Structure formats: structure tokens, C-alpha cells
Amino acid sequence: MWRTTTIGSFNAKLYSAKKFELRKLAEKMVKLVVATTTDPASTGPAKELLAMPGWQPGPTLDQGIRSYSNDDVRFLEHDKGIVEEDDLDQRWENATGQPVDEVIFLSKHTAVSNLPALTIHPIGVPHLKEGDVPPQGGRPGWAAPPNPRMGPWMTLLNKIAESHNLVPEFEITFEATHHGPVTTKPTMFVEIGSTEEYWKRQDAARVVALLVWEGLGLGGGLPVGNWSSASANNKVLLGIGGGHYVPRHMDVIKKDGCWVGQLLSGYSLPMEDPGPSKGKVSAQDIAGTWRDSIRAAYDTTKTGFPGGEILAHLDQKSFKGWQKNAITEFLVAQDIKIGKPGDFR
Image 1 (cartoon, one colour):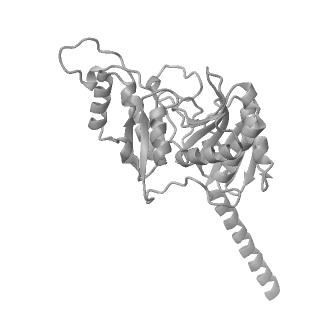
Image 2 (cartoon, rainbow, N blue to C red; image 1 turned 180 degrees about the vertical axis):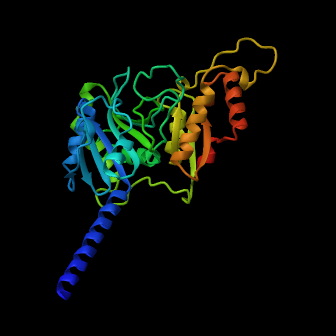
Image 3 (cartoon, rainbow, N blue to C red; image 1 turned 60 degrees about the vertical axis):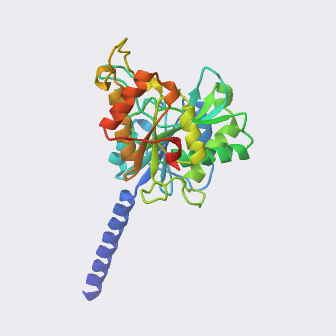
């Protein structure tokens, strides 16, 4: 009787310990890396990444989305366009109980120039108003929190691309905030551009895979770009203005290696020209969704960098006088600090 009771008690404790282990595993924060079979610039890096050691098959998500696990990274692969699967972060959490702390998408980049490029960018369509149909996914007025790794990963991407002799053939650059899919966690896209010839390049796919592998610390090294508000420099660049490749913001980022938040190009700042005026034109007189776009970009950047000092960096030369005055007035009214290039060091 004593023996039976002891064994029963032991088994109960073992069962309880197992439940605790499973619960702790479910509670572990995970990082999602997402690819699609419809895109050669996604499947190439996916194949290279999954060929590296440590990957194990994971559960199948709804609609047949396959997963693989490696430490705290979960790799998801689906069969739709990369911008068509919304809320993958929430869907993973609901299905597995594992909270997601960031999302990284692997995708192709297209450009009129057709030149080879490796790009990184935040996502969102904060300039669209209710009723607009986003051309490439997302939700009008929405932006995802920017992934804090973007700035440090740009430096790492340059390093890896150079070591694989892709520079100067490939341009290594940020893109402005654009397109979906909808996520709520810090998110970024890593892309290969700009034509099918380059999307299928194995050397480019290898570089992107190594960026993810090294950047997330899967090779045994420390992850690159973990955010901490206690870091020596906690200033975050919020880019406002400029073209799609945000060259003047890039100048600051490359020089100072600063943290990077949302990057709003001119097309994400719709402003209606007030026309000739004899007096000073107030920000309130300028119609358009530019104010909503800036506010959403600032708020999501704060979310992505908790405790960080968010500084708006304006591409001054890209604005007309009335635009620059209105944006500056709005930033001051919103208590959003404006930073000059030297302020990000």
C-alpha cells in the first residue's frame, strides 16, 4: 500500500512537472520568419535557410500553412502572395499558445530600373483613408510596428553581401514603408530585387538566408539588433519625406548606425496644395491624410521601440516651403521631436 501510494504520488508529480514544462514552452516568445511558394525570391532564401542545421517540422497552421522550428524561431511557408495572409502573428499565437514578438517576411522587390538590389523596409499604408483599397495588402490607416532589427541588420546585410561579392553589383538599401500584410508585432521585409533573373540568384538567396541565420543568432552567436532602451544610444530615426529609397535618411543611417523606425516617403504624405496665399498657411489649412500618416508612423515606432527617443528626420530638400512649414508645425504641436543628422549619433 505504501509503495502504491508513493508511485502514484511520484507519477502525479511527474505529470505536473510535464504540464509545467509544456506550459513554459508555450509561453516562450517566438520569432516568425515567413515565406511563400509563389515567389522565387522567397523560396530561394527559404530553401537555403532550412538547409542549415537544427530545423524540425512543426504544426500545420490553418489553410495548410507549414511550419518549422529552430530554437525560438518559427518558419512559416504558405502558398499565397506574400501580402495576402493577414494576422499570421495572431493566428500562430491562437493555434500554439506561443506569443510572437516579431515577424520577418522574405519577398521579391520590383523596380522600374530592373537593377539588382537587396532591401529592407517596414510595412504599412498609413496614408490611405477608410474606403481606399490598398493595392498590395494592409488596411487603410494601418502600419505595423517597425522591427528594431532593421538598422543593425542593414549593417549586417552589407557585410554579408560584400563577403559574397554581391557589392557593388547589388544595391543594399532601405525602402520606404509600404504594403501589407496586416500584423500587430514588430515587422520587416527583406527582399531581393528587381527582376526574375535576380530573384532566382542562388548567391543572393544565400546572403538573405545568412542574414536571418546570423541576425537571429541561430548559428550560436548573439542575435543582432535586440532592442533595449538602456542601450548607449536609444535614439530612433523616424523618416519623413523623400523618395522610395529614402536616400537622405540612408545617409544618416549608414553614417551613424542608428535605430530605424517607420520611413514615410513623399507618396505616404498626401498634402493638397492650398494655392496662393497672402498670409501664413497653417498646418490645419493643408488638406490630405498626411497628418494621420505621420501620427500612425510615430505611434507604431514608439510601440516598436519602447522607451526609445523617437526623432523625426525630415528630407528637407524633398518638400516645398509650404509643405515643410506645415509638417514642422504639426510635429511641434504633436510634441514629436525633430532631429538633425548629427542628433542620431
